[in-house]
Image (cartoon, rainbow, N blue to C red; front, side):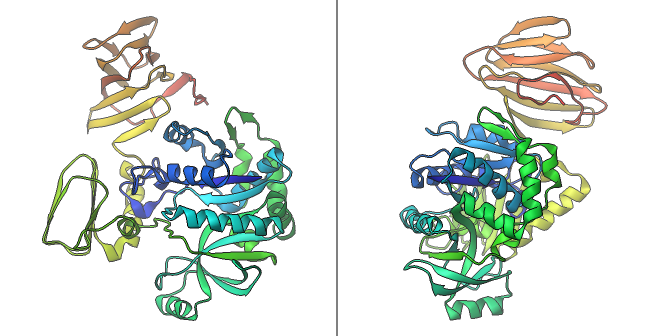
Length: 469
């Protein structure tokens, strides 16, 4: 039984300002308008005969992931981490879950943020990998290099173990450009894609041999984990597990390792240069991600925008990434250095490293329209049947004006119904809750006034999404 395990995490700091801590790379839409997470989920279903995948992700991304995949015929299960601890703990726990589904479970481990267009060739490689896994191998998917790339780890391949796979002789960390060029000339090196296939029992046996302390600690965590519908939320003890990759914990030590040098196209979408390369270009090498743009006398320039028209003139090899609250302009050759922007924003406490102007919540979204000393204006959109928590703020009052839809508002001791063009005032210290009791989206404008308007000024008393501490 082939069970897909989708690893969905990481901040994607080199893809700022679109990828942010609260809206990371797997949710970015590239190519056909679908998110990378959705594309990975669909590939997983296609290659596993519609076996529901297990998505391992941060608990903060659960509702966002569930909404993203709401239209999928087969819904995934979720293993929710309180914080990231790298791939080794995630895979060990996923293998324990898989063994409870089937004693013969074979895992196909896929990062959620990869782009693969040649899916038939990928499916063929998976079939070969599954056969090797059934023979006891731990299988990696290698990618045939297209250039002396320094941003990937490399795998040196040895003798053949089948017509499609070879022994792994050694792993090589990201080399310099001269060394990468030599690997390219030798022809027996592939990029390490971070995708794997192995029996659940085999990978746990490898942990037992090469990382026994991690395995024992992971078992204790798993024994304290309980299922709740489609999700399993890992306990706080998960954060004590060793922060280590599956490569360091197992793969670089084990002996029964094979690699399939994949013939399919592949990109880990690691930086904006990779995004541009994944999109068809015009005759001058210019690309845009299905957005409004005017390009004059420019070459090899990539434009990304959502709400505004972007026009460029006389540019060469430039990235123009526009979002409602941040603009990035950079030379393509410097795309790896975007992470430095994020580091500086984080060090200064600027919210743009973490959130967009529009922020997803389990009940819907809010969009900050204006933020100034003493007041903040938001547009709040609540899904039908959804409800905000029963809450209170110490430092701010709120004015709500309904634009469309039907609202039920708890305001102190009162419960009132509001429709379009009606409003209410909520003083600081009042318990309050907003519920959409209509059949369409509820939209309202919220005006906050007070001495402190931070999102952490909230005390929750009741919450249908389990956010009461």
